[in-house]
Length: 300
Image 1 (cartoon, helix red, strand yellow):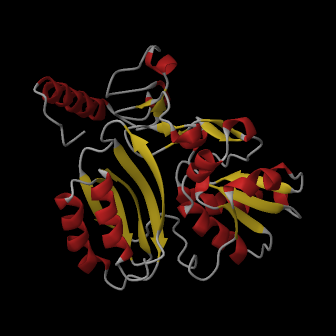
Image 2 (cartoon, helix red, strand yellow):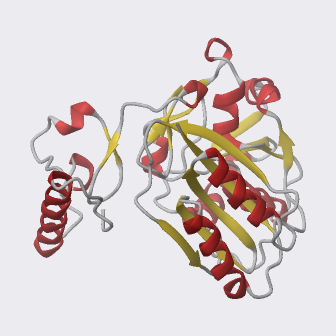
């Protein structure tokens, strides 16, 4: 059984580049794969491996400056959901593009998974899904507002265009694991709002802690690994992902005209050039050849 861990920590890394080599070495030496983003504002990512390997990497991250209180969400997979390990240096660990936003200064009020239902059922609460449109499309909380953003950096513009619609309401926001809400709640507080709340631990914690019979969640939760989605109890869902756009794909999508394995899905038919599609076909061909040889394809 593979342990999958979603984690983030906002802290101050004066020189994240200096921290990267040691973290890469620890991950690789313990067979851990996935993706970690490092920036001056902290660390964010999802990793997977054996129990011992994950424990070793978590210990290494907790030893980084300001990360001793690191929290993470665990789930499980039958097979390794990543092809390789990547540690990338970025300007932000989740890109919002607002230089004045600082989650270390202040964030909204945390609400536990067990208390979330009562908050969002209150008619004076506006519930906002801060995730991207393709994530919202396969699942969200009952009654949640969908900003229809294609990237998190679009959220501030969406808010400015719609803020008058929510005047006098308390705002409750949620995302996959909590990291986006650290920034979105700080942003709204900076816009003069007072009653701002967010789901502690995100959807993943909610699906882990709240029984399906009591749940207000509808559908599946998109995750950024080869499982594509998880449901209640963090059990893997029935989605695959498009090899071109990475959006989730249903069995019904796969049966539609225009779907081509690794090349196109109904949602992205008009989004890529003929040259792009050619590259995708060649990548898919190489993946299939590697599979026949019983080898991993690192470019997948």
